[in-house]
Amino acid sequence: MTASTSSAATAAQPPAFAAASRNHYRAATLASEKDLRISADHLAGLAAECAVKAILIDFLGSRLNARNMPEHPEVKYLDRSRRTPQWTNKHGHLPELWEHLTAVAHRRRGGGSGALFTQLIWENPFADWDVGDRYCDGTAITDTILERHLKAAYDLIAAHEQAGILGTRTRA
Image 1 (tube, helix red, strand yellow):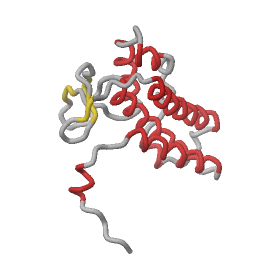
Image 2: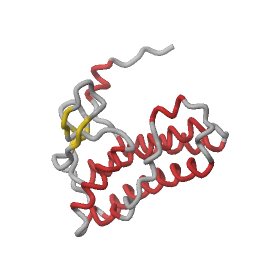
Image 3: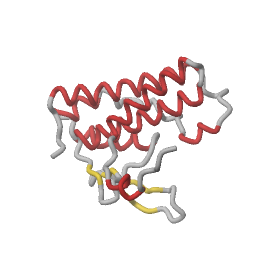
Image 4: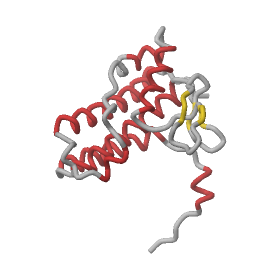
């Protein structure tokens, strides 16, 4: 058994959303091939969530705050996940996170990175996805739903990589 790393050292590193999205996507495809539907769908959603956060940070002006949480000054929503709902500009989780991508990309659709991502956001393929579905019995996760989530995760990762190749980064 190896010694665990200190949580302080781990907390200091910023999240690597792009790398995490690719890792979760690969794991999702492997789980799908083994007919592990619940795990595959859960990982597809995590892959998409990480890819959206990577897009927002790398190309659409979001930043990590002091606690390494992604946020954007133009995104304001009422976070109802707290005991006392409060307004925030932090990027949360899917499916609500999709609305953040939509809002920010639409404001930049005139050219550059915003125009590249607007083709992805017409319809939220994760409107029916919930991180809590990892506890379900799997009967509600059909082949069609799983394929849609895997394809959307792939498309987000590909769009992030294409934007990097085209050189539309906004990150300092």
